[in-house]
Length: 205
Image 1: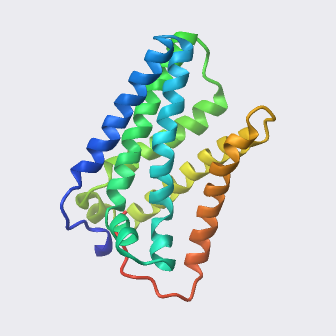
Image 2: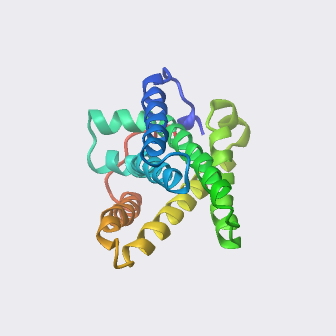
């Protein structure tokens, strides 16, 4: 598991950029429609658009390095752990916005949403709490299993959400591209796993 031990400077600029974007998402959404249901729907929409590309990068970056090694892809893979932590920052901000939305609407959370979405957030919380060298050493192979299961669970939630909306006539085209990107990222990971190309030294997740 030594390959997952981080030995580099923390890229604070990533966190600064994502935190700023999250604050802007909340500010712009509430300025557009106020502290209303529509306002928080805007906020949720903007926050997903911040978190989604970060997740996609962290999910597929090792495959990018396998097929297209270069300065950019190697940099992203070296900082994959921090990509994941920045996604967690955006996605937990999204959770806050979801709670605010339900608080305003008074709607009850369905069982499927609670189990599916809630379970995924629990996995994300565990991944976030264990994204450090101490956890890697203590958990051993279980650390890898946790992060592997968690990342694929997030992929399933994103994919079901986007693909489902892609089949709705009123907004289908808006969700075709993210659906295709998610499916492509998974296929790329499968191709990299079974590729004869020798992978470069593994990066920290």
